[in-house]
Amino acid sequence: MTMNKSTALAIVRTMVKIRKFEQSVSTLFRKAELAGFVHMSLGQESVAAAACAALQPQDYITSTHRGHGQCIAKGAELKPMMAELFAKATGMCGGKGGSMHIADVRLGILGANGIVGAGLGIGLGGAFGRDLLGSSGVSVSFIGDGACNVGLFHEAMNIAAIWKLPYILIVENNQWTEMSPSKDLMSVQTVAERAAAYGIPGVRITDDVESIFDAVTQARRRALEGEGPSIIECVTHRWHGHYEGDSQKYRTKEEVLATRSADALRRFVERCQQLGYLSADEFKAIELETDAEVAAAIEFSRNSPDPTLEEALQTAYV
Image (cartoon, rainbow, N blue to C red; front, side, top):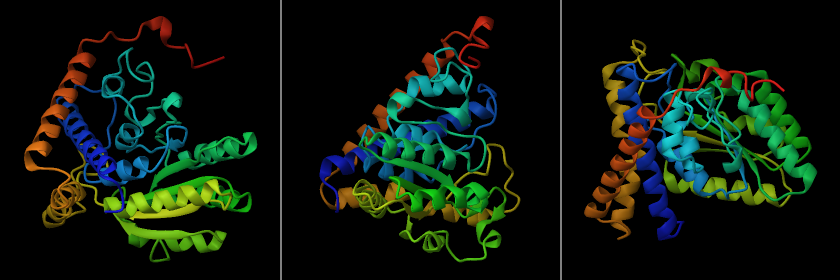
């Protein structure tokens, strides 16, 4: 194990929290209790949990339309998170952002984003701000594999490289760009090899918790030493469709079941149990505690007030 026991158990708790939250959101959406669309990160929990465990409170992150897990991993509380999905006044953004635009600058969460790849520019700006002000910390952008094909990918990585900004790009490659196989949309075999065009490190790893934690730790150290950005491509698995309610006619039932058998949470729990870090009873207790926390968040959201009409334009214009 490349991390200590307390860090390993914290990652287990975070992964369980993400999974339980996402499972409940899926159910609530299908019951038509939530506002707008939702995109689940079920199956991808290890990337957010392990990466954010390697960061510090002062570090920034930007997220995607599939960003609940990253926000939770960076410290977002479940009650205001859930209330935001319910479009309630007690939500993290007062009910105005919804699932795809959750943000909390106090926690270094510069925002999830419904525009594919838009977090690249925001994350780059965070890194430039760090460098300009001489403040400690890095900026991390989580993107999907599809966002690697937008123009801002090249612009952000080029600027970050030539200015040696403290920037880390984490690509959650769930192998599907919406409904299209990602491999059919790139002329290269991996996203990581594109890093060579900018003269920066690029690594491709699986969704193994230890591998992700080590890669982000190394990239963060490199960035803080003034050596510039890195690209980390994590090959992971999307259990649900592109959006909740997606029929997934483009995938066979066998493939969907195969993604669930490659469960990074199960594998990491087994690893911790083998090392004596965690017993079966202790893991069950973590699950029960998280179930109660998610249930409390749902109850809080259902009982929260709707935003008033007077609040509609507040914080929207200056």
